[in-house]
Image (cartoon, rainbow, N blue to C red; front, top):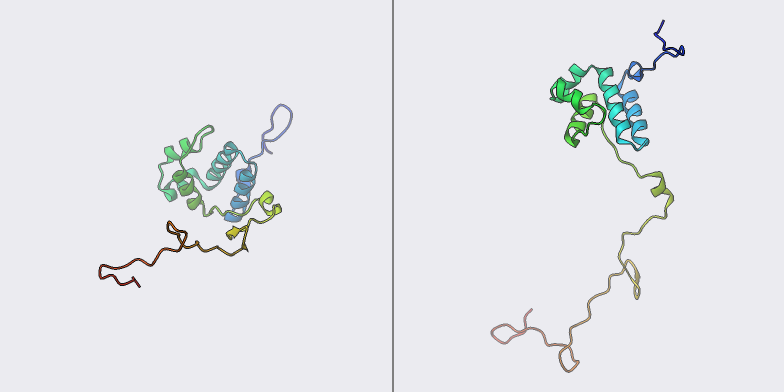
Length: 147
């Protein structure tokens, strides 16, 4: 029987339920959805305990003590450290459009002009000289027009 506290409640340890990469990925995704870095850091710590901190340290190339420090509450691990831990756990980060972005009207990436409409890029008007007439084509040293 599990140990209980003074109220008779047994402690819950999610590390006991993280048996494979799919459950680890789902657990980490749920922690990311909470939008709190402390929650993600705690989730990484739980997953590290589930997988054995010593084995994870060896697989990630980090020292065991460094890994404990990086995953301690209040720590601010470097991006490189987090990525090495995720790689050693057999999971990766994948980005997807947010729900708010999907509900918005898509933004066109085509350039538009008020005179010509979407998708048409207007050409530059020919440069004009002093008298309002178009400038002659540039000449080469021999006096012939350039091609």
